Image (tube, rainbow, N blue to C red):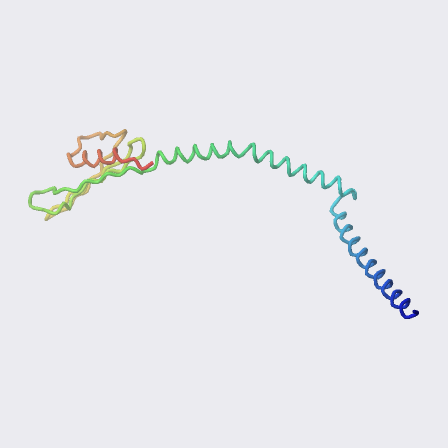
Length: 159
């Protein structure tokens, strides 16, 4: 019987030691959390922290649509100025040269502003010309082949 009391006492002592260790461990965790609060009031500081998070979320939600629509408008404006419409026409510039080695290449933006590069290939020479295009029209008369390339470019719409 004495042995049973001795065993129970030993178990109780071990349990007391374990509870003291757990208490010290938890106390140090709570103290480390309280160290983050300026006045030691953990609940009040957590409230401030979560209120700050809520305010930031509100500001973010309010600013996102405005910023996104501004960014999208800027991208669309830049896209309209990009050279995205292309038309090419191959042809024989001279009767003695075959194989459609000459070409007219029209490159335009969404406003039909751009240029036409024309390359005329011959047996003895090769000439390249550039024509400026504004609103789908050239300042000088275009070759029929250049007009064909321009028409193809104006008809193409990559958007």
